[in-house]
Amino acid sequence: MLSLSQLENQVFANGQLQPDDVAELARQGVKTIVNNRPDGEEAGQPASDAVARLAAEHGMEYHYIPVGRDPLTMEQVDRMAGVLKDSPRPIVAYCRSGMRSSTIFSYAKARLFEQR
Image (tube, rainbow, N blue to C red; front, side, top):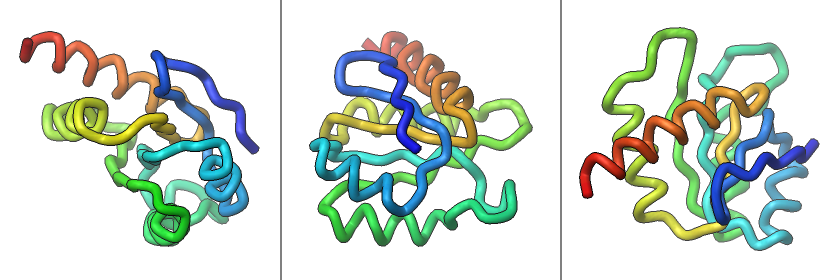
């Protein structure tokens, strides 16, 4: 179910996406999906490669930047910063609840600010 939280202009966080959500996001004009949820975290969640295939079928970019229980790494933050800087918008990042996506977004924005 889509429950988009706006993080900034044309960047949103959401909880776990289901296959039908990818088609709906495409209809809404979303250009990029970022999966921040590790595969296998919960029974029944769609695998990253399945969501990647659906995104490609709908002409969207897809990035897999899993954030687990361990602290964020600079590699994860830099990868997310790269998506924010270089990928077409609107962007939707998702995890189980949207919280990890919101957190990595904040760190990535700070990293981009540092690099200016």
